[in-house]
Length: 123
Image (cartoon, rainbow, N blue to C red; front, side, top):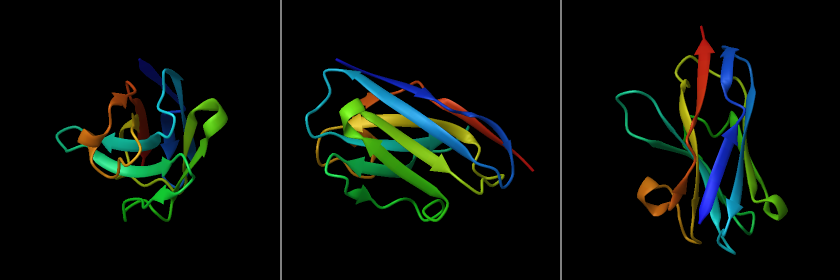
């Protein structure tokens, strides 16, 4: 069983930065993929960024790829999302997800999810 614990959400001014953290515990996959998704009310869950165990990056969504950076520390089963230059359209609940090797952009490929952390951006 795997549990994901997210932290780092909050409220910032437009143009500001936040770093989200997600720590996985329990019986994680040996070669897992960890990723971030986000979901705003009334919208579909959207892939943000992902990392494979090897460090290979699953390309980020075009809307965030310049501003957001994902990193991973395998020894701690921890993944981070550094969010810079936040925009008014970025507010959402951000979710950490963990999947087996091979998971890519689609939420149904991930087996474990955190509870989400709210990000709010003021204009």
